[in-house]
Length: 570
Image (cartoon, rainbow, N blue to C red; front, side, top):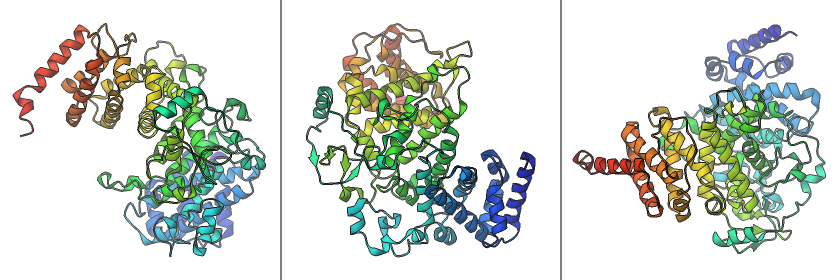
C-alpha cells in the first residue's frame, strides 16, 4: 500500500468512526485500522481536534472500543515483543497519544464525564477508596497486605493503569527501545560503590551521616543497568552494556514518551489556582512504587538530558536525538511535579542497596521519582549533574555568538524545563547546593540565568521563566559561598545590549536586576522584593564594585525611595 493510499484509507476509517457506529466485533475493520501504515504527523493531522471531540461526544462507544483495543495491543506487545508487530504497536501508540488529551479533557480534573470515568477507571476501581484505587502493590510484603479486591487479575485493572504501565514497559522493550538483555539481570543485585572520603564529608555537612538498615524495601538502583539509555548518574559507562552513543532507538523512545506525556496531562485541564499535586490519578500511577521500570526511567531521562552536549555534535546534528533530549526534560519535569517531596534519609537494605521502606512507599502522595532525586548522594553524581546543567544552559547564549553554521549554533529549546529541573535539585536534594557552591564554579550557571532574565524581561509570555530564574538566584543568595563566588571576574561576552563594565559576577547580577526593574514588564512588579533581597544577600561579600554597578544601585535607591513607589501600596 503506497503512502497516499494508506493515508486515504486511514482517513476513511476515521470518518467511519465519527459517522457510524462500528461494532467492537467487527474484526475486519479494527484489524485493518491498526495495520494501516501511518506516521505520527498523519495521525495528528487526520484525527483533528474537532474530529476527536465529535468522536468522544457523539460516538463514545466507538472511542471506547478504539481506546480498549489499542491498550490491549500494547499489553500484548509487552508480553510477546516480536519485531513483526512493532509497526502495529507504534500505530496504537500514536492513536492513544492523540485521543488521550481529549478523554482527559472530560476527566475528573477537567469537566467530569461519567462515561470517561467508567472507561478509564471503571474496571476494578469501584469499591476501592482513596489511594488504593491506583492499584498500588509494592513488593512481596505489600502484596500480602493488600485486600483480595486489590489482588484481582489483570482483566480487572483499570485501563488507565494498563496504558501507563504498558508505556513504561515499552520504554525498555528489547529491540524496540533498548538492546536485548538477560532477564536474570533484572534480579541481580547491583554492586554498591564504596563511599569516598568526599562523599562521607558531604553527607555529614547535610546532616545525613547516619544510615538506617531495614530488612527490605523498594530498591532505588536501576536493575538491570544495561537497559538504562545513557551512563552518568546511577550507572557507570562500564555497566551500560551497550554502545552509549547509539541513536537507533531514539525514534521509538520519542513515540512512547509522547504517549506517557499525554497520559499525564490531565492537570492542564484544571484551573491554575486550583492545582493540586496530589489530585491526578494518572500521575499517581506513573510515580507509584510499583510503576514498572520507574527507577531505570528516572536515570534514563536524567542521563539522556545531561549527557547531551551541543558543542560536541557534528554539523549534521541528529534532530531525533535533540527531540529526545527535549522530550525527556518535559517528561521528567511532569513526573517530578506531583506527589510529595522525597525523604533524603539514607535507608539501606542488608546488601547495602538504597531502598525506601514498603510502609513509606505505600502512603498517599508517594513519588518514587522525587525520592530518587532526593537520595542522590555521591560527589561524582553531583559533579556530573552540575556539568550537565552548565553546558546545556550556556548553549542558550553560545548558540548566538557564532557567525558560522557550526555545532554551537544548535540551540536547545528546553531551557525552561532545564531551569525547573535545576530548581528541583536545589530544593529537594540537600547535598546538591552545598556541592556546587563549594566544589564547582557556580558562575557557570549564573551567567546563562542572568542572560535569560535580561532577554525575557519585556516578553509577557516569558514571565514564568523570569520567575524561576529569580527563585534560583534567591535560593542561592542565602548561602555565604555563593556571595563569595560572585567575586570572580566576569569575562564572557553576551549577545545583549548590557552596558560594558569591568568587574565580577556580582556586578552582572546587580546590573541585570536593575534592568528588570527599570525596563521590565509590569508583571514583574511582584518580584521587586525578591530582586532587592538578592542584592542585599550578596552585598556583604562584594569586594570590588564596578562604576556601572554602583551607578545602577544608586539609581535603584532613588527609584525605591521615591514617593511614587513608597505610596504605591496605599
